[in-house]
Length: 244
Image (cartoon, rainbow, N blue to C red; front, top):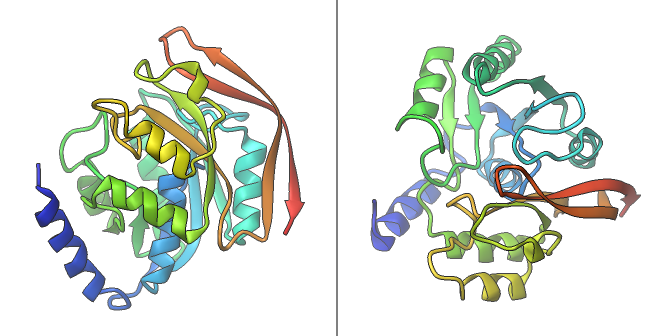
């Protein structure tokens, strides 16, 4: 892995190119903090985000994060970007992922924005680059190889709000429903071996507000659950969307 100095060098070099090679891009949108922040940074770089797309586990919930489809819809509406949703499974994920990208490319997309910080979990090294190459899109990864502590702090400074909706076995159910704020950051740094951005799969989030959001999501009724695989899940039963 790269050291912190190398990561900082790579990020500083990428900053010098912000505003150059502007493209029409489609943004992978999980509904969580990393994809949302990457979308935000891609726009700061001058890219035109023509569409979001979310991979769904079924018609009701997003893939893996398990965010209700109504909240995903509300997020897209809040930032005013069209949304594509594609139901998938573990067996068909790559095929379905490429099908969405091919559709977006046919409509004029030139690049793909993702919130990846490290290699995509569960895929071979360079998986995203291979997919983009096969489809004919250029990968745009604003968070790539950056220090995760700094990403977290920059994300807070930008004005985003997110809530924990999934945890792995490293975190107790008490972490579900927590807001990502400075106290969360201080608390999670006390846990040995846990990444502050959850890059080890420790937690996943739902974005409820942000600097470009014209409306925010408020969670009204939730329940903390332990899934069969031992992972924690915050079931969101009721929510409301409030104009800002």
